[in-house]
Image (tube, rainbow, N blue to C red; front, top):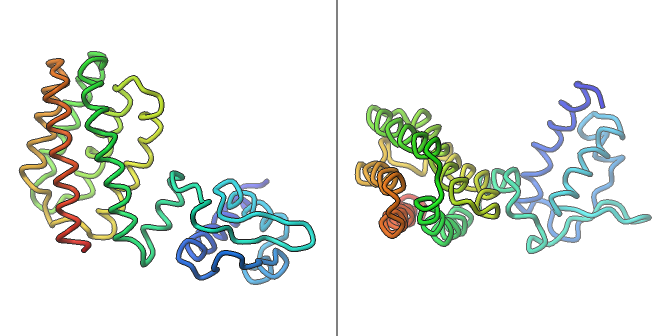
Length: 233
């Protein structure tokens, strides 16, 4: 596939994917690749590549003599970062954010406790650096800068846990944090208490205090849920 084709199939995905996750094509809907290729003004090979990507996400399935059929939402790969991004862009955003934040609440405190046991010196240093970066961007409406450090902080926690399953959730958590920021489900400046908690988690991990790291991280996730109650009821 040429660079141009990749750009075209990406354009198709960025239109068709959100339409499917938003329910514009209900489960069982049949999508004709020829018709879609004509609609998006792309070749059939580009359209087939876009469909293959949607199939890998379990959003659709191809059936011979039927066409491309939209699958029920319960079958979607809801951990796929692109699916998360598309769903957060739709009307179901509050429920999706809450579902993902509950997932974070179940995983991240345990990951932080493990990180206190297994984090390397380099991971401890990066965690502290990212926490201080969050502090530096926590005032003056610097949410994009804050987000960069926030995503990196939580990715380090998950990686430092030493659990490969937790580590694979780094992209999921990053999409949640990015979605909150980009869809303005954040205060103009982050909650100062939450910023302080991140600094304290970094300290607890560096000191090897697993219980404190877990408790502090649980406070962060509880606070995130409380923010949703206010900003995305």
